[in-house]
Image (cartoon, rainbow, N blue to C red; front, side):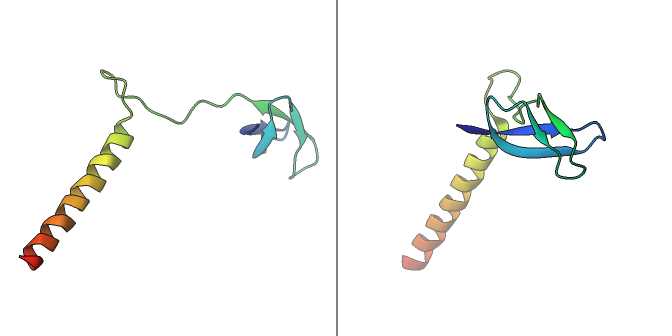
Length: 79
């Protein structure tokens, strides 16, 4: 399975690339030096009390509010 990894070379060029888990270095596409795989922090945020994903809930709420408005306007025009 391929995952997205960050690689950085000695010149400071950062490259993102899908690679297999065992790949530790690639050739930098900018300067042809070897770029080492870097640990990257996950890009998710959890709500502090419940541990829920706040952006996912916000998206869910927005979609459901829009669907309710559409359903209400359809019933208004049909009735």
